[in-house]
Image (cartoon, rainbow, N blue to C red):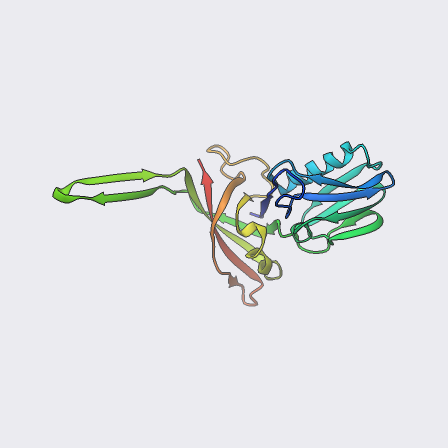
Length: 228
């Protein structure tokens, strides 16, 4: 089944503080630049929605804004001309130029390092992520400690050779991500919805291996730690 993986963007909630993936600056006929800073860490799509709301709530900006994603293309658009600037590493995270001016719409031309669509996603059954510590003392005494708050999900992502290379150095290769096992299922995983999406932390990622006689399909295995 076709699926996807999307990263969470970190935000400190304060402009200029750990400002790698949290702030967009906009200027239009009303004035600016106006800094739009996420209130906290957010999934990519949720971050785009929050930036849009912040732009349209601004008392300075005079245009109406739309900040959205279609597939792997992110667009910042408005009802009139405006300038934008992306702080920190947002150009790479969103696949847009660092800044641009004089237009009413800007769309990314590069692969955003926060979202990857997959030809197919293959998930194995979840495994317990518990860790045990067994201490043995004199006279056969044993003290056993078991702890853990997550399960481990082993996932295989089937990608085209042209898109695989950037995945393992992207925001989807570390930290918190959302995995869609089936892009057509927009609800979370549960016992009654086994094909739903899963939120977890990347615990490991394999080297790629190729399929097909022309090596046009690449498989990358990902290990997700999913909180209970």
